Image (cartoon, rainbow, N blue to C red; front, top):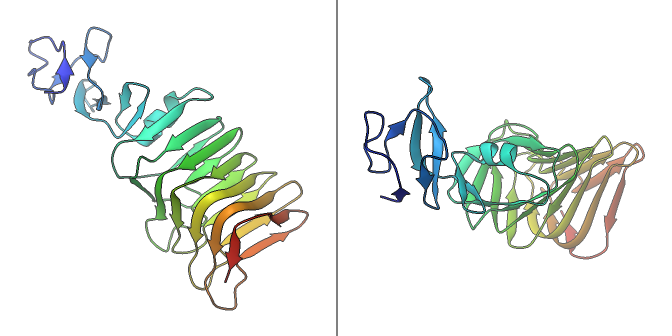
Length: 220
């Protein structure tokens, strides 16, 4: 069943996909399962979308909310979501795909968000700036692919995005990576940023922001 110590009562069917009246320590879930709160304030046991240590969460957003600084969140299933965080955390996509369904849908407002090992992509061409650093820092690390239907990276309000191993690709008619404002920055250490191959510039910094390429490639 994947669930241990679910008591047999009127609120649980004991097969791992039942409901209970509280997600308390009375019930212990195996790795890969999570509590999902229902509209009637009961809790259903479901397969987890994300995990911190051996604790599963029903969504990536729930895991982000529960995380402490220096935690690592592992994605266990493909998901379509968006989130903002001011924490210093690592997001290991586990080879899965995070589809971003809102503009600036993966955002750091403080601390450092490090993302590795999977795919981040926009849901469609209504989603601008898939990855954004609004005063925080984002590191796009190894084995990571970022694909945008519009713009891919946006740094502002003193935020910084560092491409360090990731492959970032933008779309036609849009600037792929854009930094604006004093203290804002985009740095390419390794990996690549590939632009739209039209008359739009791949990497732009203005109004006191900086763009630095110390390794990797930036191409149109």
